[in-house]
Length: 306
Figure 1 (cartoon, helix red, strand yellow):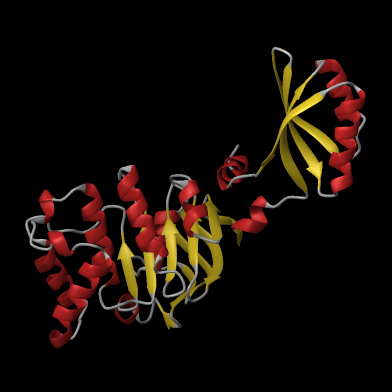
Figure 2 (tube, rainbow, N blue to C red):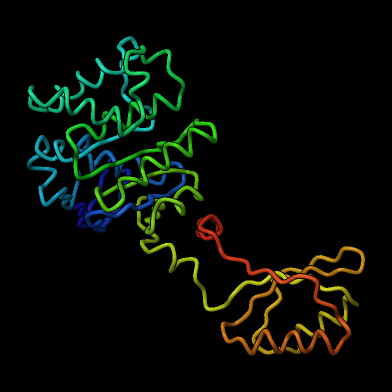
């Protein structure tokens, strides 16, 4: 549904997007991550035909962006970070106007507007002027205009920016409801949000893709991370760690006579069982064992240390 093949974009001598290639299949929700200035917004503007690539090819629903930009726009629903709302209009009139701009058939406009009002839970505010709405409702109006005419592709830039926790939950639920129905590229700085809504992530840095993988594969490593709280003599417990094959000490915090250890443990169960036996040998008493998982945020920060 979305295909980029060796796409680059130059502004004078500056390369904002550098030889980027990826494909997003029908029904996928893909998170799009990068620091400010990494090239995210430029690439999203290329995908939505606001800009033309300097090199390479982009296809949306098998349609070439460069040669058929108007046709491509009919296949895309786009929500920029600041939704393009006419705040002096009421919600229903604005969506009716947006439907006309999107060339929805005249006889279908009313039905189409009622559909997006319902899907975005806007029916009770449809007669309100947009400027009187909360930030959360304005975001929903922005999403409603994006899904008018039922486009197969949605490109959403910071859809929950500035929302309170309740509004964030509502907007996330709405976007998640499109899974398997639409192809969605979702840009956000809230990394846990990506983990909740997407299964795959693309990370961009200095205009180049540095990661394109499924989140589950990214956070699954060759070793498990385990937090163990042990009552006993600190030096003896550290000896137990050192003398156990397949166990790696990541962090150690001592509070009174309780030692909290963050351990890297190779996948084979016998390694951890051997550690427990060694702890018992030095008269340690295990109080708690908790599995720790790497997060997308940790992976992102590690990739952007320099």
